[in-house]
Length: 192
Image 1 (cartoon, rainbow, N blue to C red):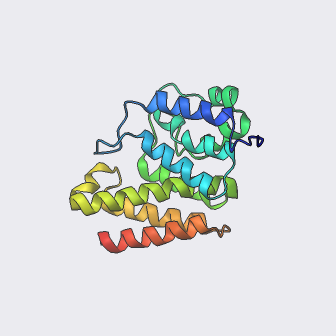
Image 2: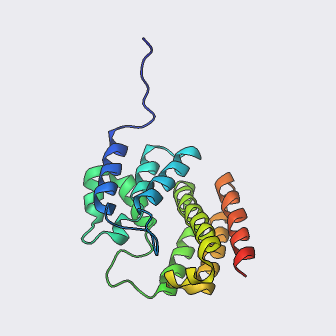
Image 3: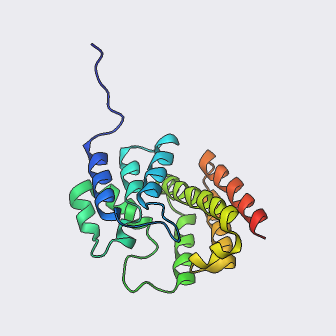
C-alpha cells in the first residue's frame, strides 16, 4: 500500500471550518451567491498557483478580520499561528469599526500592496482576480445597475482594479499577476 502524502494538513481544515461557520449566512454583494464560494475560489487559486498550506488558510480567511464582527487577530494567532494571522491582517484594508472612508482605505492598501512580499501578493492577486471575474460576469448580466453595489461606484471600482493590477505587478512578475492584468483590461474595455 502506498504511503499517503496529504497536500495540506489540519490547519487548513480548521481555517475552512471557521470560514464556513462565520460566513455561512452571508451572500456576495447584490446576489444570492453564498460568500463562502468566493473564499473557496481564492484559496483554490492560491493553491493552484503554488501557495502553501498557510497561504491557503490565509486565503480562505482573508476577509475574516474585516467582515466578521468581533474578529480579532489574536484569535487567528492562537488557532493558526503568527504567519497566517499576519497574512490575513495584511490582506485587510481596515480592521476597525467604523471603517475609514473608502478611497482613503483603498489608497492605503495600494501603497502597502506595492511593497508587499510575494507570498502576500499571491493571495491578494487571487482575491482580486476572482472579484474581477465575478464583476465581469455580473456586468454582462445586469449592466450598469451593477455599479450600485459598490461604494466606489463605476468609476471608483474601475480605478481600484486597475490600480491593484499595477500595484501587484510592482517588483512581482507572476502568472497570476499577468492573468489579473488581462481580466482587468477586459473589464475596463467592457465597462467603458
